[in-house]
Length: 324
Image (cartoon, rainbow, N blue to C red):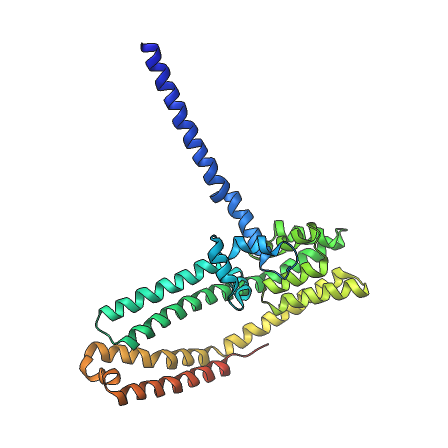
């Protein structure tokens, strides 16, 4: 009897261990580090311009996990441009998750304002504002990532030039940047090397790189490589010259940024000041400022003022934004 009981306990223990092992292997296959890395690679490949290379299968992993939601998203205009925008941000967001977060913020903000007793148009305005702020936050992350790639590009080109002078092929130089370079530019170059290694033509792979990375400096590199492939020449010298050109452009852009710092600070102050004053008046004398949304004339004045402020803000930022 004791032997049967011990055998039952042992078999039960083994069953529990095997169940936990099976659950872990299932999780690791779909949610583990290797699975996430493969999914990110597939997402990166899908955001390029390779329309004819297993695009439906790749984009199914990218846009949504549910087939019905996938089909719905594919009907939206410019959904693949949104796909590239999210990939460039480096936030590992799918189109479905991005839209879901924006919708959740809009609903939560609008309901909170409506429950506080504000009018319906104010609740709708807050809902739209929260969705726009979420998009602007993603845009800020995208701009920071693109700026980091721009700053890392000259060193990456120098590394490629030295590798080619040492006898490496162009694809091997790309791989060296992908393995030894800093992130995030190493990730982009590694994707380009993988595309070439998978059999995608060089022109298509370089075009995908220029599509994924919204950088004019990197497009100089792409155009130079494609022209060199057509006409011939010393590519290592071309890469060295592009690296020097990019460094000079970045130095000039830094100088312009320093000289325009005062104007940009003034633009920020003039942009934020009306909203800060409105919040201060709302906190100090709510009855006085409530005329702006309770009285029809006040609503028209607010709309007219917001339109003029929008034009003025756009004009100020156009003045302080100097393209090099």
